[in-house]
Image (cartoon, rainbow, N blue to C red):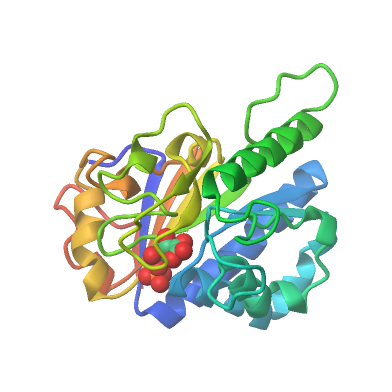
Length: 267
Ligand SMILES: O=C(O)[C@H](O)[C@@H](O)[C@H](O)[C@H](O)COP(=O)(O)O
């Protein structure tokens, strides 16, 4: 059984999954802006996250979002020099951000290697945590208590075949972190080995967390994470939103769902 705030949606194939998730993201941002005048989203690296952003770029409905009133953050980053084509930020800019009118001051990429933080991902992580805390303070309004991290409207995560999310890998130190909100990652099994990542406590500050997985090589990971596996063994199992957790899958990735889990929609 998943908890009541968790839904699972299975789409026919990964292209449809990307298009449907793009429509969903546009609606989520429009609704947040209608309610509060502003919206915030946390982006992910990986093929599915980038396919979703490319589908947003192609959607005529994208103009319903006021891109200048959106704060954009990243769940993780490959700690590579600025402009490196393997950086998640660079890929997101190519897929979507360069095509819409985002406010550069509201786009918050994780720091690059080689610049101010040299080859020190921990220092980069600390700086990013400070930027998040500052945004949380600014967003809380006068007199209101501010958390250490903003309550993001939506946080996107690709799921790896080993159940990693962001750069939190099974049994690695990052997934055990309970105090810090951003960490430097060394020796990641997925290249490049050095990364910066939000931790599970930061991820759980989001109102909604959407996990994306497509392809048969993800079926085992999805099945494990939805079988109430522990988050140390299956980091995706610990990625939950404070209001909602949504799994967006294609059929091959849904091949090993536990019997107790009933997908909301199979189209
Ligand atoms: O930096 C990265 O590579 C990611 O942020 C990583 O966590 C990714 O999202 C997953 O590995 C899923 O990637 P795919 O969608 O390509 O399978």
